Image (tube, rainbow, N blue to C red; front, side):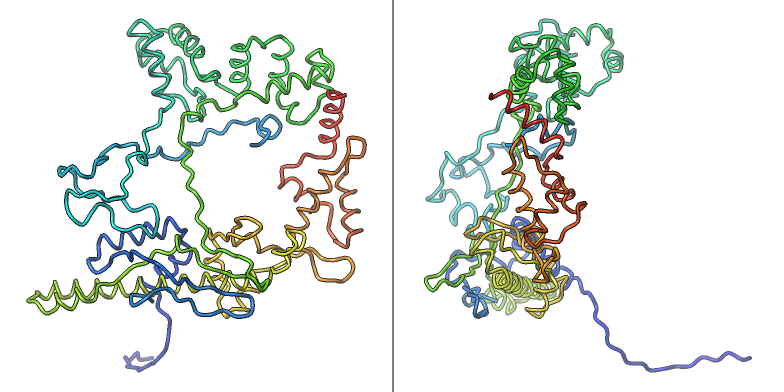
Length: 511
């Protein structure tokens, strides 16, 4: 059989995921802070981009219609840790806040304009238009001072408490081994070998360090941390020591066994427990910045005069940019090289793309939010008990978008409503079947109903999971026992046996 070469002409169509298309998809799922940082990065590398100073006439939508948003002008386009948490996390907290005092005084000509991005998407340019002239609204009191860290706090005490150089070296080595919670995770033999001392020297220095503030620091576990604090309060007796040695029983609310082990009655045991609850299981965290960013809502829902819902995009969550096409036209008429012309052409293309992508992102968020409010109208009127089952496919079909697009838009987006600030994904819940053949019930509404039932139970009538199933079926909710148990555990609610022990013990203590 002979082989021969042939030329065939074939025509086909396919969708190519260009880098710009991929970036447009990423923009949909950016949080407000991520989006603002991305826009700031683009402004820094693109000479044709700048932020718009003012922002008015934001779009408004109601339940009856969804107008296209007018996005611009000419440039448009405290928990009970003793019961719920006995394992101390060793994960690191967020990076410390920048405490640098550089450029505190912007009128100093020796400092240039800060290159850090603005915290708010609507902020103007940092610095001033004229070098050496500070902004009129500059407020020195708004500068955040550096916070005292746990290491700094302990180092001050070490320099005042320990006298010898060797003891201070050991102390600083142990400070370096602390985790953010203030717990010590170090091998004493390894520390001794590294510093050329004896293990007994390390243990002696540790004893001195455990007397420092904050109380409970340099402990190796939760029970030791609590014991150190109780010793400082002169409340560490044999009964309390026995209680700390059996913290797992405390987590199970097994007060009867604990009373027998500690040699006290349930009333005294409850008093001991109240003392433990006043202690700090993570003493080191008091000296660390939380690293928590404030949530900026993307959409606000308000009730209008005609009882309909007004849905407005939050101006603080919309980075507004301007494309300086006049500058591009002027510079294009000058004698640019081919590489310079290519660079400016790419800058104009990227700026135009970003302008349109931000417009499309805002429009998509508004459409999804409007449809959520339309389908969950009863929730905004009556509360969580009226929350309806809703899937992303239901919203996608209603607004003519793909389900994956709705999923990206709903990620890390928040809605300010009369019922509080809620994430978009809060409204997407599975359906629990109705025993009477009516429409299904939202899983979130069922969770709320279970919590309400448990909150109303008395010490003499604790509801088991089977009892909860029977009561829910009496209200027309067809749910399995394992589902009730899963929802209860997800809300961090103890079992009926543990709740009975706890409530009876509390009743004895207050009786």
